[in-house]
Length: 192
Image (cartoon, rainbow, N blue to C red; front, side):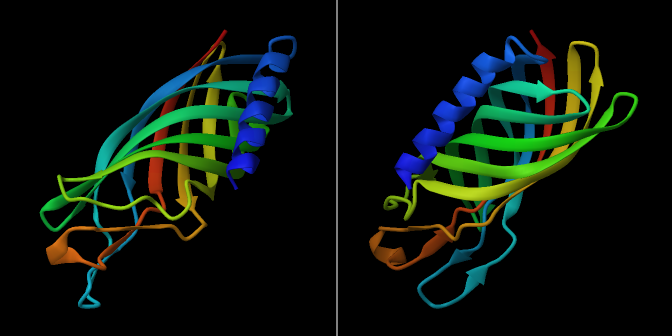
């Protein structure tokens, strides 16, 4: 799975470099309103729908095509979810591979798969194990406005691949946290 992710990352970087000769490439950043999946404790209770928090993201993108386009991105994302007095902080590298269509004027819509590579997880000072799969797959769906060199978009991201991290603390042995993202993402972009 890691090899697949690395191939996709190199494809994104190649597409961004190629896009310099085509319609464009640029930088992006913004805010996420994100949460991860449920927390399952060893007594089979689940803390469902954790409190979501505001996070952030920074990255690069390329755009190939005009009316119908391909837009690969490579984005560093930081999220945080609250579980009954504890918080799960996560850092990841996202690689959305989006297909978009200009609808009318500056309005466009897009969707596509998103590969996620989890860089780091931290659960409020409680020891946790490694995430089952460092690489997971999700989907991005959204709409945006292109205003000259500037752009703004709002999208929804949801992880598909089941992925859990196990809590290693003695009093919480066998507790698990679902790390799949569920987030709204607001981005500003600048085409170079």
